[in-house]
Length: 228
Image 1 (cartoon, rainbow, N blue to C red):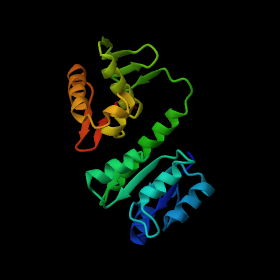
Image 2 (cartoon, rainbow, N blue to C red):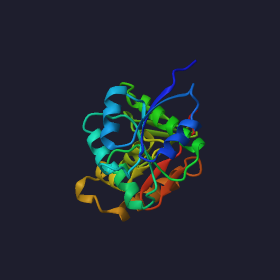
Image 3 (cartoon, rainbow, N blue to C red):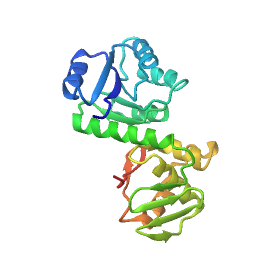
Image 4 (cartoon, rainbow, N blue to C red):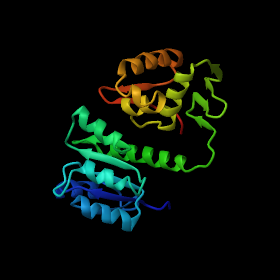
C-alpha cells in the first residue's frame, strides 16, 4: 500500500472542508485543516505536507499574503482553490508561487488530477542533473540544446528553445506570460506580450500537431504532457 498523500487545506468555509474530506479516500490522503492563514502556515511547518490547497479569501489575511510568506521558507506545491475567477487573480497567484489554480466550483476528479501533476513535478524537480526531458513525442536535451519530435530533430531558434524548455520543465502547469518574459528576455521586456505571442506562434507551427501548447487566456501557457 502506498503511503497516503499529506495535504494541508487552508479554507475558512467549513462545508468545503467537509466536502473535500468526504471526497478524498482515507487510504489515499491524510488531511490537515486550517481556517486561517496563520493556522495554515503553522500546520505546514508542523506536518510537512506534500501538497497545500489554499483559498484566497481567508478571514485573517489574503491568501496571496499567505503564499508569499510560505515561499520564503518552503517550496511545497500549492494549488489555489478560490471563487475569484478574474485573470488578474490567477496571474497574481501563479506569479506569486502557486503551482496551479482551480476556480470554485470544481470537480474532485480534476482536483486529484492536478494534485498528481504537481506531485510528479515536485519529484522531478529534486532529481539531480536532469539533462533530458521526455514528454512522449517530445524529447528535449537541456545540455545538448537538441529537440526531437516523433524521433526527428527539430530546428529551433535560441528563443524558441528557451520557451519550450521552460514549458516542458513545468509540464501540465500554467507558466504565466510574465514568467516567460522574465526568464527568456529579462526585466526590460516584462510587458512585451506581443513579442511573446509571435515567438509562441512560430514555436507551435514547428511542433504541431504532436505537441499541445494551450493558451490560458490572459494568463499564460501550459504544455500538455503525454508522459505516463
